[in-house]
Image (cartoon, rainbow, N blue to C red; front, side, top):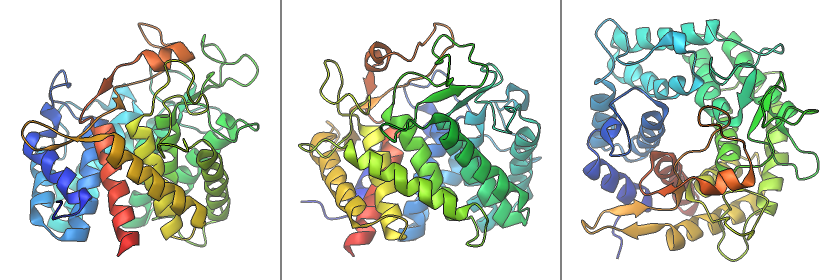
Length: 372
């Protein structure tokens, strides 16, 4: 019998198994990177709700492996111009807020310097990486937009609200499929990539985790975006519209979502934990805050139960483990990833992947808050 909440039970299992998040077995080396940021964001939410100092201390000790006294960041390279490198910076806000130490503010300024100089599309959208010119991916909106909005609020620089809103709106404008209402994983303004549709520039398939990144970005940015911001209503509207499309794709039997979102039980497709967790989180939070209606909450409850039933297991050390998370998926690169259906179902799954565990914890928090 579980004597604590699922959110705390899974968090406690994770930090017991992985005292240093950057040293997880699948990481090639200890580095500043977006997966660390995912788990620290989830732990901050658990800390704020429980007040248990262990969670804050975990974030601080892990972040201090990288943040030097002068605010420089170990293993981080600004000139890489990689939006993934922004995500771990989200934890700098709570560290600065709680400690007042200038090194955390200075580290934030380094990330903001990257964003100021980051290469952009003709409409001002951030390239996903310097090595992927003129490309925007859904993933990148989550990596950057919530940090921009939080920075705008904490340091009274409202132009960053506009930047965050622009990332959300431009990605939806370029990636949305009018037939399904879903968003394609990536968009190439230059239309030079093999994976890019020669007319639209979009990649050929819908990947659930990519759409999940985007939905989490939107609902998290809305935490900071002022009620009077001129783009706020439009952002709430596209979030509502996308949520309807996502609920239509939910598997009736399991309550989960498939790796390739719209392909259901096509051979090789599978029910995937990270995308399902992200959708569950975004739908539940959106319903709680009034952006979405009751049908979204119903879908979120069903998704949460499906995750408990089908993706959560107990390891030999009695720790809880989240399974069925796609290890990685991208576009282009070397070896080349063509965005085909065969590609998305070929990437292996992994247990305890932060990209699944973090949104699962946050989904649990939302369901738990709704149940109180």
